[in-house]
Every structure is written in C-alpha cells, then in structure tokens.
Amino acid sequence: MDIRTLRYFVEVVRQQSFTRAAQTLFVTQPTISKMLRNLEDELNCTLLIRDGRRLLLTDTGRVVYERGLAILTEFRQLESELSDINHLNKGILRLGIPPMVGMTMAGPISLYRQRYPGVELKISEFGGLTVQQAVLNGELDLAITALPVDEESSLVTLPLFSHPLCVLTPRSGAWLSRRHVEPEQLANEPLLIYNEDFSLSRQLMQLFSAHEIKPRIAVRSGQWDFLAAMVQAGVGVAILPEPVCEKLDKTTLMWLPLQSELRWQLGMIWREGVYLSQSAQAWIACCKTFWPAEAGQ
Image 1 (tube, rainbow, N blue to C red):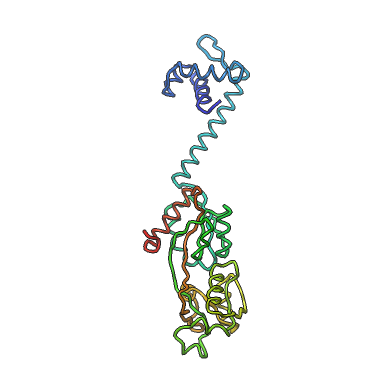
Image 2: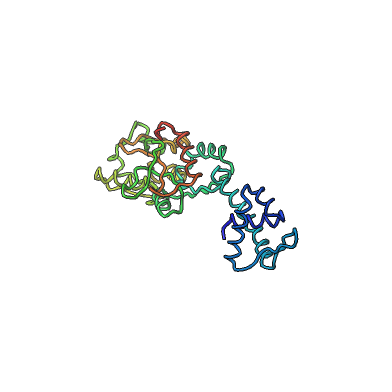
C-alpha cells in the first residue's frame, strides 16, 4: 500500500463515484479501478460494495477509510513541514560558539534572525577544541573556532576574520613605558590564560615552546571578563584578542601588542562530506555577507 493508492481509495469514497474521483485526481477511471483492485488483493479483502448507484464500505473498508483519512492528514502535514524547512520558514540550527567569540557574533546572528525568523538557533558555548569535537560527533551542525584546526580532523574551514593578540596589564608601573611585548618578556610574569579546551590556549603553549619559554601560569579560566578582573586585581597579566581588550576599562587597564605572528583567526567549521541542512547553509551565507573579504566572497 502506498500514499497514492490510499489517496485514490479515500477520494472514491468521498465522491461516491469512480468517475468523479478520477476527474478530481486528474487520472483515468480505469487507473483508479485498477489501483483499488490491487489494494483489495494486497489486503486480501473487499473494501467497497456497489448498491445500485451507491458505494458502500465493508467493515474492513471503513477501517481503511478512517485510518486513511488520518494518514493522509499526517502526510499533508509532513509535506507542509518539509516545505517550511526547505524554504527556511522553520527549522533548527545547532551552532557552537566559544564564549570569547560571542561578542563578535551579534551582527551575523541579527542578520540571520532578520532573514529567517522561523529558524530556532540553539547555541552551545564551549571552548574551541570542545566545539570542534562536537561538530565531529554530529552534536553540532556548525561551529566558530580558532584556526587552524588539525589537518587530519576531516573538518571544512571557512576563515571569517583575524585580529592581533595583546597582553593585558594594569595601567601602572613599567608597563606604561612599553609600546609592545616580546614573548620572552612574559617568561617571568604570572600568566592568566584560557582553559585547555580553548584553541588559543594550545596555540599559546606552542608559541612559548617555540621561544623556549616555560610559562608561569597563575590562573586558567573560560571567561574573558574573569581574566580581565584578575589582571585588574594584580594577579598577573593576560593574553587576549584585541577586540576583547577594546571592551575593557581603559582607565585601569592597558593592552600592548604581542610581538608574534600568532593571531586570533576565527573561522567556521563543519564536517567534510556530510549533509548540510538548509538552515546551516543559510548561516554560512550570512557569515559570508557579514565578512565578505575574509570569507573570500
């Protein structure tokens, strides 16, 4: 039994006529007669009995008719929902954004909501390495993370934007006379950096190793505002992206460029060779619109 056969049977009962049903469905009467005979053969029962000009349902026919009405209603609902999803009138997008990145995403999120108000955004806030694994596991459709990612991770990357890193310090003491900070000058400083599940943390450890520096890590955290508060309290100095620093209090804090080729480069990632939903493709398009130069548009 298929949906088309069920639709033919229901329409014959509704119209009380093979001819009128054929006209309504834009098929020939022999086609409908053949389909209903096949349906009765498949179910091994009689569904309709002719009584003069009337068509009467058998007990089995009534069950098939009533259930058929319900099935066809559900099928129409399914078609409607699929159409809404395909046209982005509804749907869900599972997006991973590290906490440090959130402040930069208001623009594209606003653009996405304006274009597709029916799509629900489910945002997970974890470190870059954690969201990368969630994408690989299929728990997230897309994620924003620091680039580059592991070349063997089977992730597709789309660069979005890039910013320099800065050393966040108190606005006092010897820091006031400096214009930048060399990595070697951080060797004896208590450092406040992100947790190990952040890509930036791993990249900083690689930078220190390349300069043969054994860092003195005082505090690790996943929250940039907490790290900034620790700097303000005199616990140590932090290494943060420039856009994060620019949101801080300039009267008590200052930030100096870190002299290094290492930059805070952010990009979109998704699994290579897997189906991308319409909502995910629309998100990528929004990001390309918002950052056209960096995204290669």
